[in-house]
Image (tube, rainbow, N blue to C red):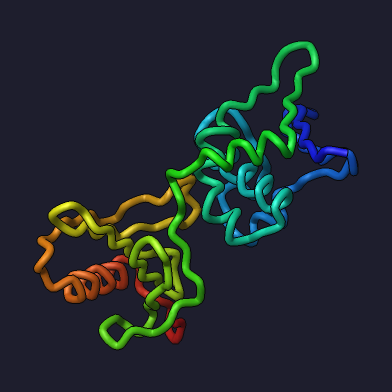
Length: 205
């Protein structure tokens, strides 16, 4: 039988069931990836509860942690934010085929992630260079801060972001620099800025 997820309200809380197994989908597993809403799921808007549900749905359906973390924001924005619990049945229904179809069209809002990374001699000790096919990413090992370096038409775009408990990556600094600029220096300065914003606990790297 086709996998499907059904959500309904019980005493004001959103309860999600996976069919045909009849098992309840809880935030627990997804909270190990992103901690937006430990109190439960929500739908119908772009916020923390819907973000947690989006991550939980992708993680449960695809059983791929990296895929879920990279795409749950776009899935929340384009799918979960549109779900409603109203009408006579007062529930929503989302099939595996609908999830597959949605994921085939999602290209925006990909979250930059660390893959373990590697130390860089030009960066502070708590930063790692991350391998990404489409951009350069530098990630703090001790905080959810990262630097995304994008190639523009005539200049580079450098953004220092923080994921944390937010429902979307929030830019902390946003710079554009000329193509011939010393990008390594710019990245190093952003890493140092991040360290100044939130200092590491003693001995934590």
